[in-house]
Length: 64
Image (cartoon, rainbow, N blue to C red; front, side):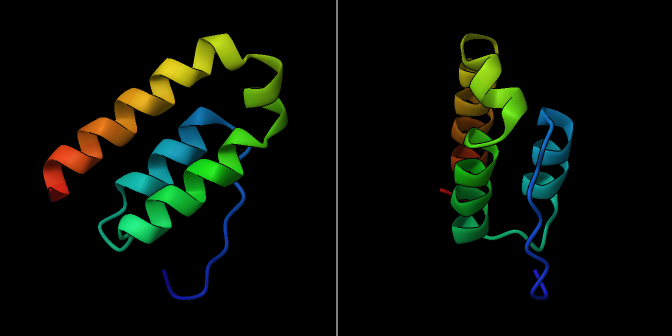
């Protein structure tokens, strides 16, 4: 991703980064880890865990 180390603070930011065609599998997993340490995720983990897992599963299906 051209050295762009984005730290997603919202699910929308996370989604935008991982849906970018230049975000490869390593980028996706790295971004997911970063998002999971965000305030939004840690304070609302029950709400966001499934959304994140579903998106990662969808992306794996596309690449896999």
